[in-house]
Image (tube, rainbow, N blue to C red; front, top):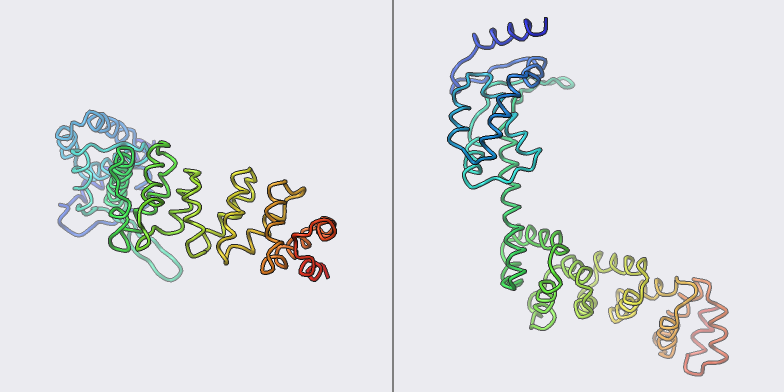
Amino acid sequence: MQQGMLSSLLLNLSLMTVPTALSAMEIQQSVVEQWLQDTQIQSKVSELLTYAARDEVDSLKFALDRLALPQQEVVRFRLLKKLEKQDVILTPRMALFVESQIRMTPTYQVLKRGDGYEFSVPAFNFPAIASRLIKRRKQDQSTLDFVLQAERKELNLKQWLTGSSHQVQTREALFIRELDSLSPRALAALATQLTQANVTSWLPSTAAIVRLAQVSQDKEVYDLLWRMKADYNSQSELARLSKVGDAFSLQQLMNSTVNPTLKPDAIRLLTKSNPLSPTVKQFLISKMALPEEAALVARKLAQQGHQNWLEELMSTNHQVKARQIEQALK
């Protein structure tokens, strides 16, 4: 019964077939669904996928061009959909084929209705899929180029991250995304470009510096970060370091207090741990020995429930500024 219905639909559509240069034809969504489920279509797509896997593009195009409409358009759509879903790596020849599909105009349209309006969309929107495939291929190629240049120590960060706003934004996003795929040697080479060269006239964004610091665990990269103007990225890194809470992370929190904007948050995060580690205690004591720092540190300690330790310090440690601490405890 279903086969007879589909045959009838095929016949009707075949009678309606016109050259692709003419205006698009409207078909029902139910017809689209039946075409997409047709076993002959699926079989033909499997055949073309085999050609694609072998990079036999001429055979693929020949087999596709031999199909009549609407089968050709459905197969074209399903083929590109499969390439996208299976994350197929496009060879140069296949990339040219896929790119050519972007310039083609779909023949069949489906009418969509909304609240008081209607509009037509392609029934088999293969150009949109082709466009996504080409965009992904360019991204993949850019990623490969970045990784290879970084591993060969051929990537000049200043040159690579200089250009139009869009280009810099795109490359910084790639940099942040792919850093953890690099070897320790490649990471060290990138870090050295920022920490041992004169880069006062140019620096990547704090987001890029934060990610390099996280992945490389390079103290000098962190030192560079703390000297930069504080923003959301550097403040978020303080919170992350506090959650990690190992010796290296706590040391970076202490180091970050050289930045006046980050200092209050860093002190607050350091005082949150209970009990305080000996290293953190010694650091906080050294801060409370400074007239300009004592009140802030004592206030943060008191807010985190360390009043007893503060009172003990005032009576046993003559280095700390007892008057400022006492005022903070009131």
